[in-house]
Length: 204
Length: 162
Image (cartoon, rainbow over all chains, first blue to last red):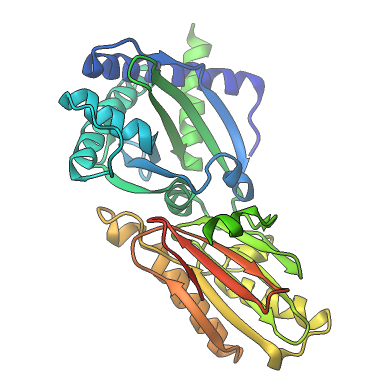
């Protein structure tokens, strides 16, 4: 898979718009400032995914991208275990950080993930002039690489060996929460997004 | 025990890759993927593949990526380096169903396990041990020089020797 500079820039800008909407909603939920990084678009060979995700425990919330683009691919919210516990604590006014992950954390993650991803997809879809809706979420509290490779196995056609890792980090310094939004479009969806972006740039 | 294992330098086998040798090999964070380990007790060498999908469907560019091609390739690599097929034993690890909400759709893990077992049977390679299925991730470490020891660390922290 090859993307030129202009396509990469357009994708980053799209990510920027989506992520800033997600950041606003996260900021409202936490009632604190949320910083976001400049979106990154990396083309990663499947054998190198272990350089991005190790076997540390994390919370990974997964949504299928539904709407006009079918099957659209997946969008994920990744939080390290500590951040996930901090997130629940912040929302429920608890302070115990030295505890196991429990069902309450799971519900909180599903809820927060849902709000962030809905905002992200809604903003990007509106810009592109299409409909993109997240499926009901699935969640794994497990080794990051194990959860991630399972999703990649779904997206990838047998003859494709790289994934477009499209990610933005959102973090709250006050509450020590780090999260990452990752979009894994399947190749047809990516082509369609690039085509729509090209049209947008062309008409300006 | 766990800390000792982590101090040993290993070569990580990424998704779709395979390696042959007598050095320590690992596959970190197996979810629905399956690590296939072949060990030749006589020569203290072995091979590991990180299998992602059950069938290649004629896609031959990454033999380690698919159950059918991985089993054949590991066997071929070991025998071409002097191993006798009779001395080769297999171990498989992984193939979990990581997402209970997406059970039907996302259950590639089970299909991977079945495909590997079927191919091993077809080629008459004994399956010595396995730690497969269920709903959690695993990391696996394989030591060809230590009698082919296979060590699994599960996501909940429990460690076992297979």
